[in-house]
Image (cartoon, rainbow, N blue to C red; front, side, top):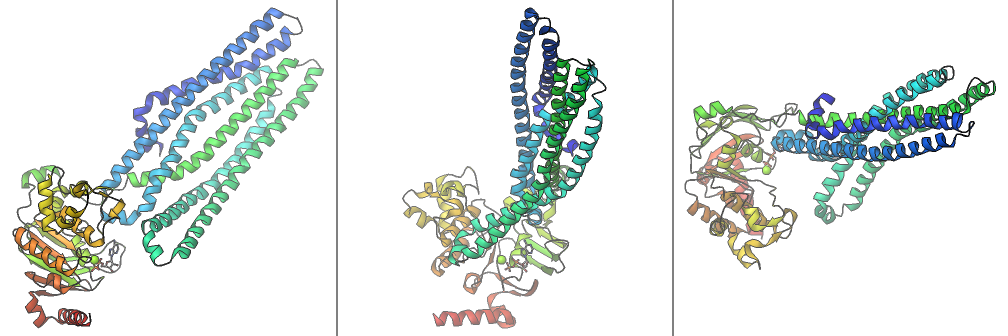
Length: 581
Ligand SMILES: Nc1ncnc2c1ncn2[C@@H]1O[C@H](COP(=O)(O)OP(=O)(O)O)[C@@H](O)[C@H]1O
Ligand SMILES: [Mg+2]
């Protein structure tokens, strides 16, 4: 894992290398101070050597000040390296996720991606900071202090050879149990985030359906689950502290017991005993630090795996290599569409096909209606054309060529889709429209808005194109949003435009003007309209009837009225509906 993540440190290698250097200096000072102290107690005081005492004292103060400076810089270096490291990982994660196909996004789900991008990266950042500061400090301090303690009195140092192995075993036990708990903790965090996200995105629906209590309970459960998971993991981790404290005090007592005897019998000097106890402290504290680093690294390991999983997931969409594109050209010649024996399902694990054996041809410039019950596969069918998903079996051709043989950019520039649940972004109307074409001027913008029947309401707004839209376009009506989304798609001047139920919230009069506008301005463009209302597609050149993922009929309105039972039923039921009104 370290090998996979280390490259993200490359830009910050200078602070990452300087930090341990500073820390080693700090440790050398820390371990030499007890020696100087022993010097004062054992030589300065008995001999009343004021010069030695003062000189050593001043040296100690100077060293302590220097240690302070070095300590501050090592912290600063560690923070710089760790924060930089985190931001590099986030950058890569984000751009990786941008490449993901719809299928990949379906597989992960948005909430876990958000957790991985934030909380998991934070965990990695924290362990890096801790690791840089402590992973060098602790072992170095441990060894130095141990060596010096042995030099003072090797007999007394046997205390460590009893204490250290016992502590190591205890620590190992805690860690091996903590890892699965930390993994579970991150998953619970995912679940909480997914509950929060789903609720907040659809908070209006939740309120409208008076589902707040239900949602609150759902949140409460996820929240409690997270709390319990965290406590379960922490319960183990907090054992670590008391265990270490116990070891420290036991060692100090043992050292005082045996060392006191030695001082009395003249085998050891008082100052030596004092500095020995300082070393006991330093040794066991570095062990404690090491154990903390290990514990946090267990948590970071769980996070690291989650981050790497995203980094190592391919986009799920293959693009032709540049040489092939060079050879074949990368241009969509016209707006014709052909499906050849296409089967489709959303994931390999899914048992049933969403679409089965779909074959049809659309000539460039034709207007095609698609009708069918909800869940019959209309959205799935059209999403194969701009390669939002890839066909499982068979081929989809645009302009006479397999869609997989264009670069995604070329294909998606030529095929504009207005999705069923279309989204606008925070910003002005102009900025939103310019998603279709970055440098479009106001004239162009108003022209497409005219076709999309959006010009009228935009002009009525006090600030026109500069009107600010809230997140998701909350300050517009459903029909207005739909028309803006259509205008945005038109601005790409596509060869094929797909409207997936995009006029469902538009009144019938506007809907019919919209169709008229399309007929006048988009003569060479292939238009594919999915609609619930027969009215919206009645005048299409041909209409495709989908039933349970299969083509049930294809033809003009009159042909289908004659031959297709489903179509006739839908038409009749809608006529009756009109009469009822
Ligand atoms: N992202 C998805 N992952 C898995 N199944 C999906 C997904 N989107 C739609 N489906 C399923 O595919 C079927 C067809 O859906 P869809 O094409 O949206 O129908 P329609 O647009 O005609 O209402 C439905 O059974 C639906 O549950
Ligand atoms: Mg649909």
